[in-house]
Amino acid sequence: MRVLLVGAGGVGTAVTRIAARRPFFDLMVVADYDPARAEAAVAALGADADRFVPERVDAADEAAVAGLLARHGCDVLLNATDPRFVMPLFRAAREAGATYVDMAMSLSRPHPERPYEECGVKLGDEQFALAADWERAGALALVGMGVEPGLSDVFARYAADELFDTIEEIGVRDGANLTVEGYDFAPSFSIWTTIEECLNPPVVYEEGRGWFTTEPFSEPEVFDFPEGIGPVECVNVEHEEVLLIPRWTDARRVTFKYGLGREFTDTLRTLHQLGLDRTVPVTVPGPDGPVAVSPRDVVAAGLPDPATLGDRMRGKTCAGTWVRGTKDGAPREVYLYHVVDNEWSMAEYGSQAVVWQTAVNPVVALELLATGAWSGAGVLGPEAFPARPFLDLLTAYGSPWGLREQ
Image (cartoon, rainbow, N blue to C red; front, side, top):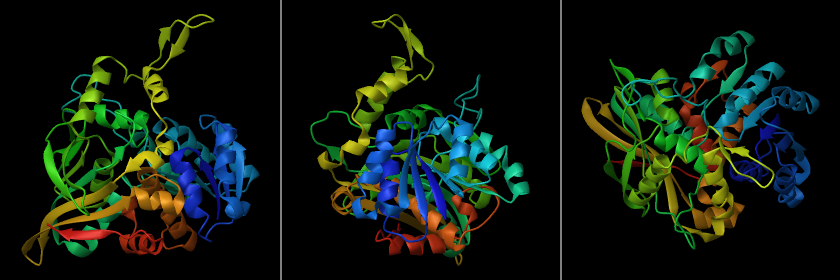
């Protein structure tokens, strides 16, 4: 397997550090708009860098990406950029005949008249609209293969296959007790993506009703997270799992709730009130005349890079899937989860917990594709594949998962 990794930020760099320890691929081209980032990611691997090559590429330039795939003979494109670049990279992979893997799906657009009741363009709609093209070509686009979405979807498939006869509800629940020393507000993941997820109308799925939306931060609940994290208030957030799980898993209701904390949600609400969450450029004075800038890009530029916060972070992050249903005629309720301690991920890989937890899952998926344990054609989510090979290999990577009876 020869892989083109596009994006050498926190998650992309963590991908290289995890993949360097595995023998399943022959070459990984590490490409970024900023060549210094790609070069730094490869240089940091030291003696393990012999299978890695840094390159520069503009992720929005489909022809350049397809050309890079061809020049290095890459048969897989792994997208580690933010969701704005999903579609050009998705199309470039199809043009070049490469397998495509991402960790977030094409962007949504709220319903123009009823944003908090009806879906407009849903996450992933643009990709699924092209599924027939991928199927006819016998090519695979594996979408939403990070941790959430990704591992959380694998958990849903595992629960449906092995733990339940009927499922009433699948609810992804994400929480952490991470703190960042020296900062009053320092998100542990891309603020651009966080704003997109948290301020868009959350989507809920119900059997008989389909997909519908609610107000941001709706239906608050306190969820008790394992391994010492404890109770965290979680709220509805737009996320890919709600759009993916019902396509392959028979559940009467699917939700996603994120443990943000009151201070975080208040900050996001303030950004929205000030219009600083907008992506459409506004014109501001500059030293050489007016300049068009995206308010959200300004917010992101003013905050620390999450990839650089590992040394200041303390605590654990938990991603998991809560499932309620029946088994052998009796009620059952479980929480399948994966916890990463920041102290461990920094000591073992030099990557902070949130980006490492996101990065490990696409690497596991690439290995399953390389060995043939996973295969398929079309635009498929993680739930479309058997869960057990993934969970066994994740454990073999030294990062076990857990199951708690509720």
